[in-house]
Amino acid sequence: MVQSESNPGGLPLEVFDRFRKSLALNRGQFFLEMASGPFYGFNRPNAVTSEATVRNWWRQAMNGGAKAHFDCIKAFAETDFTADLKAITVPTFFMHGEDDQIVPIDDSARLAVHLVDNAKLKSYPGFPHGMCTTHPQTINADLLAFIEGRL
Image 1 (cartoon, rainbow, N blue to C red):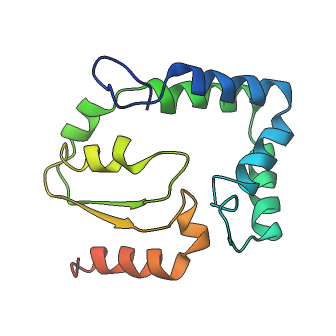
Image 2 (spheres, one colour):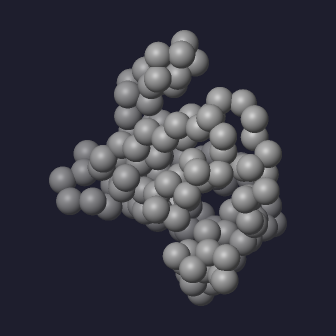
């Protein structure tokens, strides 16, 4: 995800440094703001929000370790998974929300699908990063269709 010579379209390291700083200053607030906003797209105009979804996500996040959370930002931001993706030999189905504010589709799934042989990408207009929670009927139906060989 981080901008580098091999990933010029990535996000500047400062973006992830701000995540780490926010996490270190007030982990509970960081997770509350993430769930209330960009993770589920609840910060978008006319979004139908769910307080129960926000609270459940916050509860799950707060059960994790602070050090693991901090290290996770580095891992997802700075690890190059190119070789790992090229090594995948089984049919692979990438699903990605086109309004993912956490992991932009152009910097992830649209690149990754070309690295995996026998891979398919289905993108979802308007869907957020947390699309499995916000749109389970659509996501589950497509997962089942892929598993059954209909996609």
